[in-house]
Length: 351
Image 1 (cartoon, rainbow, N blue to C red):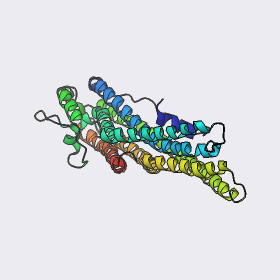
Image 2 (tube, helix red, strand yellow):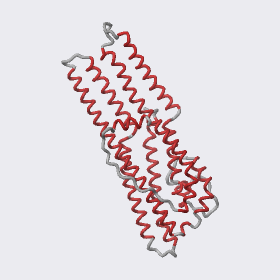
Image 3 (tube, rainbow, N blue to C red):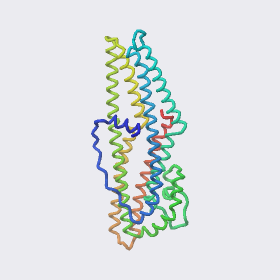
């Protein structure tokens, strides 16, 4: 378990989340199985790299914010314990708190420096984009026009260019080039086969349902995290105000600890939450879940309408289905681009 996962579990401890049940596993068309198998190893490698980069970046900024509050705690503890007094038996050990404070600040500085120098955030965004685009390649392949001369570059650019403004992904383009001949062979005359059109549309619906379920989970978890952190910060603010008022009558250094550390901890939690963009992630994921449901309904509607067309008119049967799937993938790509724009401003080094 990584630090960011541990923090999330701790913050949501005892919270009962009403998560939707997972949808059934998608069943791809038989024609696309060779392409799915060919792309799977590369996608797995891309996804593992993206997951590692995401946890490294998130753990980095959670470490910075939380350890900054711990540094404040180390600074005030000798006063709260009374070790700063020369008459205290443990006065000779008061310097250990100063050493702990300096050590904590040094660790924060190292994390900050490494995260900035090695561009942890940028690596996360790049690897996540590559993993996402490689995952959808088998879904995009039937939309590519393979009838002409062999093409070069990403299938996304051949289908959606210039509308989607996709980030440059050389690894995805290379994966497309590597599997171009295979896709061309297995998809020859595919749109003239009503069985393929039907199975491809239903597979697309299943994939979109899986993405809808994912974004529903994100929205629910982020809403719960926001609510929990706001409650914790409210409690910390209330205790700080209470400690400040009690200071008028009770002159104890422990109240100084309360009025110093609790605001620092609250600020750290708020800063980490802002860095993670929890509010906007919750809002955008909730909106995307609704948009995906609309895309699912459009594909299902076009599929039902196409089924009433005579099988002898295969192009009329297939074209509306193809267009509705293309619109659904465009929606996902646009949302991914929005996510990039949402997170990118926090390129300011981890802080």
